[in-house]
Structures are given as C-alpha cells and as structure tokens.
Amino acid sequence: MTGTAVDAGPRPTMTGTIRIRLRTPARRRNLELVLLIGALILSGAAVVLVQLGALGRLGGAVLSLEAGLAVLVIAGHVSLRVVAPDADPFVFPIAVLLNGIGIAEISRIDIAKGLNGWEAAGIRQIVWTGIALVVAFAVLLLIRNHRVLQRYRYVAMLSAIVLLLLPALPGIGRTVSGARVWIGIGPFSFQPGELAKIALAIFFAGYLVTARDSLSMVGRTFLGMRFPRARDLGPILIIWVLAMAVIVFQHDLGTALLYFGLFLVMIYVATGRLSWVVLGLLLFAGGAFVASRSLDYVAGRFDSWLDAFNPTIYGRAGGSYQLVQGLFGLANGGLVGTGLGQGSPALVPLAESDYIIASLGEELGLIGLFAILGLYLLFVSRGFRVGFTGQDDFGRLLGVGLSFVVALQVFIVVGGVTRVIPLTGLTTPFLAAGGSSLMANWIIVALLLRLSDAVRSQPQWVIDTAPIVVAAAGGEA
Image 1 (cartoon, rainbow, N blue to C red):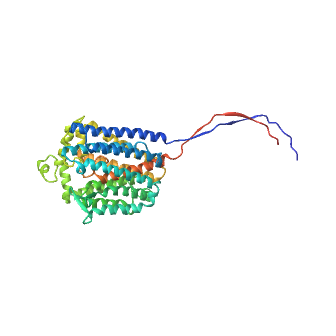
Image 2: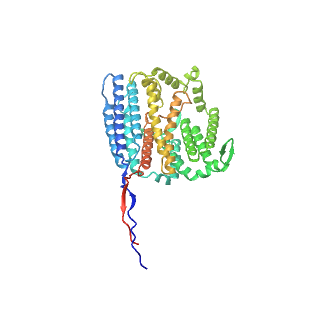
C-alpha cells in the first residue's frame, strides 16, 4: 500500500512563551523589619517619656536593658528569615510593641514606688521578655511542621491536666490574692495555667478534627437548631466539670471562663453548630450562678461588680476598693491622658499586673487605650486569617484557638477593669507584669508564625503568555 504526499499548506498554531515566577518572601520580611524598627522606636520613646515625666532626667538600667532587648528582637527577625521566611509580617512587630508599652508603664509604676534593681518589676519584665523570646524561637526551630503536634494531642491533654493540678500539690502550691494558681520553688514562682491554655488548644484542635463528624451531623432539631445526642455531650460536660473545678478549688473565675470559652469557640468552628455555644453558655451560666450562691469567693466578686460604690463593700477586705480606684484612674485620664510619667497609677493595687489597663488608661487616655485595643484587634485578626486560610483542618482549628485565647483574655481583663463583667485575676497579654504570662503568649506568637509560614509557603505561580503564530509545514501520509 502506497501513499501520495499531500501538501496541506501552512497550519497556523498558537504557542506562547511561559514565564514562571515563584513568589519571594523577601518583601514580607522587609515589611516586618520596617514595622519592627517602628515598634522599637515607639517602645524606646515610651520609656524615655516615662523617665522625663516622672524623674525629669534619663538614666537607670531600664534604657540599657531595653537596648539589649532591641538587639535580641532584631536577631529574632534575622532568624525568621531562615526558619520561617513566609511567616506573617505583622504578628511579631505587634507583640513587640505591646510588650514594649507594658515595660514602659511597669517601669513608671516602679518609679512611683521607689523600686530599683531586681525588686523593680520593670527590670524583671525585661529579663522575662528576653527569656520568652529565646523560648519562642526555640519553639520555631523545634516545630518545623505544625502537623506534628496533632500526633501528640493526648500528650497535650495530659500535660494540661498536670499543669492545672500542680498548684494543688502541698509544698509547691502558692495562694496569691485568694487564688491558688501559682507554684513556687525557692524564690521563683510560676503560673502553670498559662501554659495549660496552649496545651488545651492543641488537644482541642486534634480531638475535634477526628470527632467533628459525630458532633455535627447527628442530633435532633429544636427551634431551628440541631442539638447533639446525649451520648455526644461527653466532651462539653468534661470541660465544664474542669472549669467548675478551677472555680471551686483554685478560686480562679477568669481561668475557668478562659478554658471553657476556648472550647466553645473551637467546637463551633469545627462543627458550625450554634447549638453547642447555646448549651455551653447555659452550662457555664448555671454553674457560675450556683457558685455565686455557695462560694464566698465568687459571691464577693459578684457583689463588688454589682454594687461597687457601696461603702460597706468598698471598705471590706477583698471588696471593691481596687475596682473603684481603677475607675477613678480611668476617669482621671480622660480623652488624652495625663501623659506618661504624669499620672498616679500606683494608687491602684496591683497596678503593674492585674490593673495595667487602668494605669495605661490614666496616662494615655481613652485615645491611647483605643490604640492599644486596635493593636490587639489587628493581632487577633491576623491570627484568624492564618486559621481560616490554613491548608489542613488541624492547622485551621489551632490558629483560631490560639488567636481566640488572646482575644478572650483581653476581653475578660478589660471587661473586669471597666466593670462590664465581674473582675477576675487574669493578666493582659504582653502588657502585664508576669514571667509565666509572657512566656505563654510568646509561645503563641511562635506557633502563629509557624502556622502562617505553612500557609504562605505554598507556591504561587504567575504565567504570562505571548501568542505567536507559527506556520507548520505539511506532512506526508
């Protein structure tokens, strides 16, 4: 069989040149560097204004320690370029700025109290910040893939239980301001519940990834909401019992609310069922009501909240004196504040820790407080963004949980100081004095940076085509 060559003529075909460009992380890290420099300048300026306002001169160990801390922050930025080049560029600078503002205000309260050296809470805060930064970047180095944490969800659960039980042990447990949430070994004290919230977030994320189908797809519908079966109520009942145990045995209403609120939000995000939130709020409200009727500690907190200006409640031990003094300080600050170093924040008990918000509100005013709350809002929104854009369910739940811990803690503290809710003993993240709180919150920063690096490190392809007409020669059949 033979064939004849047939010339079909030129056949135009469309081809193109393809240019592939991988998104580079350099811009993100450069933006972070600019923001870090701005945060360090503002933090240093706050310390300078405190010293000029309170002393009329510059000096002391705070400025030199602040300079050393700035070097450590820049070193952390350099290490981020290596270990997490695609991490979110806003999380680290916001945490640095909040931490720096807290150091400035704490050192101002030290000046008012005449404290120097290691007795000064501001000096200890700088040292703890340095330790917390080192621990945070050690976490970044050790955890190169956040999915590894999912394997250890039950280890995290066991760790959280142990951390919560430690203050109850004789010999090392310490009672501070009526709450038994501290452990002490020699001159050092630590609040293990701060680390427990991170362990619980890891456990909740790992557990809900595997159990969310049974928690979300079955149940009966009532008033437009699908409620779970009785057999599926076990997790929320266990966490409720844990929260009530914290209130009863540790006298810590704020920590109980923090743990329970964390679980409610994470189970809602995992299942999308509002009924879990309704059930949880009813359970916690009922437990808090019973506790307020049966426990003197809780009843006293509610009395101080509802009737703070009653002279009897104001004058008694553990009454509303601290709450009222904080409100007077906020009122004295007005809209623009008295100025750093110009107010009288030391008149409020625990002004450097529980009431750091009232101290800042007096000297920075309502505008300054709104700016601080705006920083928290941006920090939490970046964390939520990391959670919602994650590549895996565990990472998404963990990102949302860690961000919500910070948001809820800020709400509980600010709500208590401003008398929106009963006062609790929680500390304001990054601002308040306390090494355990700083350590835990900087670990949260490290985990959010790791999660955001995993999200953004996915390749982004940019394809440009330039059409070219090519004449193809005829073939031979």
